[in-house]
Image 1 (cartoon, rainbow, N blue to C red):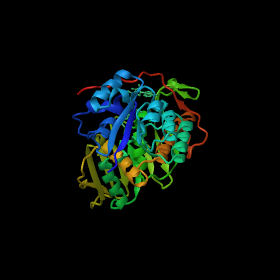
Image 2 (image 1 turned 30 degrees about the vertical axis):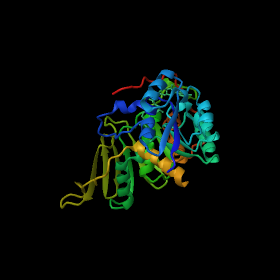
Image 3 (image 1 turned 45 degrees about the vertical axis):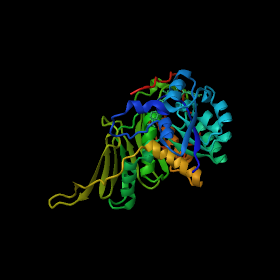
Image 4 (image 1 turned 120 degrees about the horizontal axis):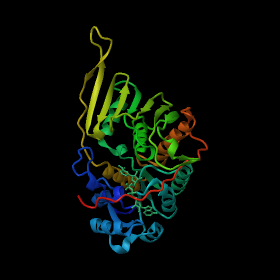
Amino acid sequence: MKTYRAAVIGCSRMGAFIDNEVPDYQAIKLPYSHAAGFYAEERTDLAACSDLRTEVMEKFGKQYDVPKERQYTDYREMIDKEQLDIVSIATQPEHRAEIAIYAAEHGVKAIYAEKAMAASMDDADAMVEAVERNGVFFNLGTNRRWHTGFDKMKEIIDSGELGRLRTLITYSNGTLFNTASHNFDLMLRLNSDHKASWVSAHLPNAEKIIDGEIFREDPVGQGMIQFENGVMVHALLSPRSSDWEAICEKGSLTCWNNGWQWKLRRQTTIPGWRTCSEEGTFPEFERTSSTANLIKDLVHALDTGEPTRGGVRCAHANTELIFAFMESHLRNGARVDLPLKGSKLRLKRDRAPRQPKFTL
Ligand SMILES: NC(=O)c1ccc[n+]([C@@H]2O[C@H](COP(=O)([O-])OP(=O)(O)OC[C@H]3O[C@@H](n4cnc5c(N)ncnc54)[C@H](O)[C@@H]3O)[C@@H](O)[C@H]2O)c1
């Protein structure tokens, strides 16, 4: 079978070395980084890499067998020379659109872009345009969309055995670009990618990072998302950590500890009570690497021409929620209707890249 040539742009933590941060973490199955995912996947050949930091690429080359002549400080040169099928973009969001658009315009067939998709709505719109015009397959690195536990959660919701889905809760929404981008995608996925109609949000402590239309840091944000099909999302900033809940008319599904533990409860009636919940059984599922699953999804799309599970429109819907939260905050929590029109806000941070953990 055909092997696809892949390369990683942005060879730091998520690009290459984050696996070394979570070796014993039950919630995450390795491979986790893009490079580790391509290296493990038999249908991809990790052919080249690009980063501004040569010392990081040197470690990358040693770890993933990419020779020095295929390590590029200029991603354009790499794309022009290497005949790549798949390109990963694991830089920070401020750099994403420029790289994604160049890749889409210069023959790359599939893009694995880290979240958040982009640093502004204009950038996100331009990415959709370039990706669709060039027929490029696209997945955003919102890993839970390819997580088998959330597949099971969605399967139960879709089966209707707990009645109609009414409410989704994210207990720790976090910073909008870094963390809420994961949460928003999960809410979209559990609600079968129905369209959102409005959001209302508050960003505590955002005033000191807002500079006109520029956000100088990634703000934390809480709020509500109303979907057209009636489902309401409550995105909290509670002290609980990576926990999510889907509440249906006759029961609920909860994920604790970032995909490690799961619970199903059914509503029942006990004489003397109106309604109460009783514990059911959350079905067993095979725990696999969501990064590996995402890459297999891209390979399948390249093999068959079928769409990926994510796609650039899902990524755009996610990005709209991020910017709608920011717009709502600036309007004192007023409802902001979607699709979002005319937002000129932009994330623009002045920050050095993190030092990856090169060894276990
Ligand atoms: N999906 C996940 O679970 C997950 C986990 C961690 C991080 N992330 C995401 O991955 C992205 C990267 O995060 P990180 O912590 O690895 O970032 P980082 O800041 O440590 O690394 C970014 C790398 O990109 C490189 N870079 C910047 N501009 C470049 C350019 N023009 N060409 C080539 N390389 C360039 C930098 O030199 C740096 O090495 C972020 O968007 C983050 O939100 C996702």
